[in-house]
Image (cartoon, rainbow over the protein chains, first blue to last red):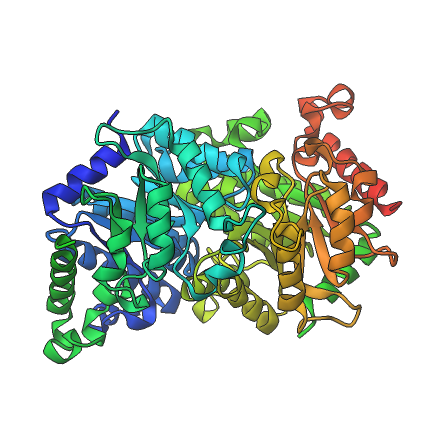
Length: 307
Length: 307
């Protein structure tokens, strides 16, 4: 069974860039060209059809330029059980295109329940049933419940050759509220979590020196990222916050090790809705939205390949 | 729009007990009488059919004895998108029986994504489409991302007359790892989270004096629960850990205020698999599993009504 970190590095090296495209399908932002084909199914059904069609198109456009995609399950879950069928189909379609899939699910619960989530997102469904399975190459996990909420995901990752990214320092404005609290000894809570990530991932180091247990570290906090890079030298970082959230390629630099490895950098809105934002809006507009998405994915991949 | 806390209190007073039954359908524990009817659909389909049939039976049995149920979405999610259709049907079936439903989803994400989760679990689907909607009366939410990850749930709760229970001190063995860390000033992280719960819930106090923003506080840590009761006098506590996790009615006592209100106490395995555990195992066995579940629900409701 190949270690997830080794698979991830091989995929990044093949594409020549650590770029990841986040798939956040918001019905109100999907091009009219797609939504108009789905109208006959009633509003709820039309939204699901449009979300799935848009997700598939995005995968097709970006597959030539990036190695990794990160579908955000919340945008599918917002459409109920049918939306999650579209999530399952998106994950499967990405795999068929040779893309590595990080399911952005941020799950966690007490031990026996965390096992059920881990089975859902990191194992195959019983009897090889593929339709409706959420099985990704890796998932994001929330650490608030401590080891017994995280370990079932790590066990599943170890057994299935898959990966886990633990939320350490998230990219959002209020991430400081709890994550930056100083605990006794003077270190922040996110540093305590980082120490645990080292512990949880210690048994899953691949041939290239990285663990299948990684960390989510926002590009929006480069100073903290720089410290976390030193504290967790063997953890792969999943770095949100590049692009629409304000992070630049320079801001992601502290997330990489000197070997040029150690981080996969995500952009969602900046790529998949590129035609709604400068400079692609002026150049392409909605009519040429596919070209805008492709140009943005290409530009991001090139921007980050120079890191 | 009636405040969720007022609805919760009215429902508890009508049934005369703060008991909540957790619906954690594990395919391997479902009575053979149910699973044998589902075999013809292939293994994956059979599991989903059995999980839904079992959930419906549990609702029917307990509806006369308790006011609140807490389906755990992870056990449905473990069966993929079809499993989540069964979750949606379970939530709807509970509502039709007049039960209040706390969706145990423990979701959280950055602001715009948390909005999508909140829409999924606390709002109706677009166009009134009911099939596949997860809309519960309240949900559980993880606080690690801070205010902008929690507020979208609170906004939805405010607008829809629904509720939120924020994880404060969870019932699992490793909850101390991060939640009990002392932060500068000497208070634990869970106390910092409790302060925020007061802040988040301050605008949603109902006529009975409780907020629609509550807290998850494990019965397994009565000393901490006692302190949290004082810190968050207006928060309703959702209390896991009674029964199979080791907590007794006495352990839940610190979760109540002097008015006899302030807590809803959950038991999952101890009720829905009562025939596999003493004393119900000896008295009923699997053949009479429905009677065992009903006796356990009745006994729990009575045990807690004396609080």
